[in-house]
Image (cartoon, rainbow, N blue to C red; front, side, top):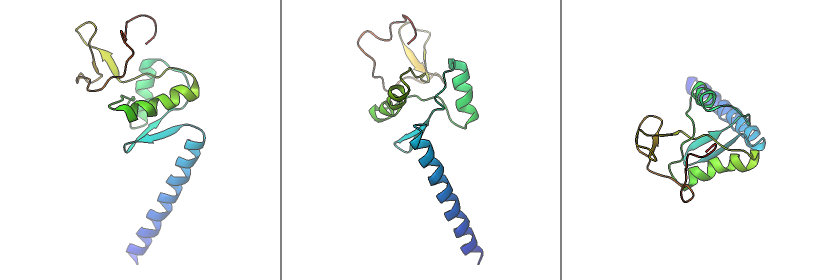
Length: 121
């Protein structure tokens, strides 16, 4: 009986999660790629506030590691017609970049001669 009750509870939770994900997708608040969920609240914020909100939600600021993840982030950029912060920072070596935790970048998709350090990038 306990296994049946647990199975019912799991089924109910899966159903509720599926409905919530559907609402978020409908409102262009989440997208997925490679088992990762990319999410936004659609509001503008500064970089530090963005990092903090991501951490409060149990995640981290988006850092594309392949073309599919880059496209997932681009989905929001296009829909909200704005820029997106990424979990990348300039290293101590000018012109070189790294992940926020200091790890080296393994994927970039920048235009030629970018980032240039001019304006908001």
